[in-house]
Image (cartoon, rainbow, N blue to C red):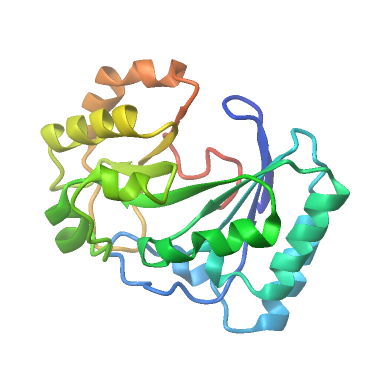
Length: 229
C-alpha cells in the first residue's frame, strides 16, 4: 500500500493516505475502501506518524485523504498534521468529507488556521442514482447546496446504470459551479457494481479536453495520485 506521493502535474502538492476510524456512513454500494479503517487508535496513529514523516513541504500544499472523512482521523494524528504544517511551512490543505459533516467544516479551519479546500464525494448530481443506486446518503437537491460548504466535487464515471446524459449534466454542473473537481473512472472492486466499458470509452473520447483543464483532475485508475493499491 503506497501512502505517500507527490502530484507533479496539476495542482502540485504532496498527498498522504492515512488510516482512520470507521467511516461514519460506510454503506456506499460501490465502496470497499473502508477495509482500510481500524478501531485501534494506537495502530492508526503509529502508521500515520510514519507516513507523515515523508512530507517535505516541497510545494507548500498537502492533501490528506483516508477511507472516509477527515473527521474520522484521530485527534493525535490531526495534531501531528498540524505539527508537520508548521515545521514544513505548509500553506494550504486539501481534505475530504462526507455530506453529513457539512456543518462541521469550520472546526477544521479553526484548528489548522490555514486555507482548506474541502472535497466531497458527490459521485453524481443525479439524486436518484446517487442515493438509491450508490447509496451515498447525500440528500441535496442542487449544486448550490453543495457550493455553500464544499469547493471540489468528486464524480464517478463508468458504472453500469449511468447514462451519457447523466454524465454530461455532471460535467456541466462541475464546470459551472465549482472551481475544482475530480473525476474517478470506476475501477472494479469487491462490490457488486459493474464497470461500463462502452460508457468509459465514450467519456474518454468526448471529454479528453479535460486533461488540459488545470482545475479538473481525471483519475483513469484509482491509483493515479500515487497512493493506494
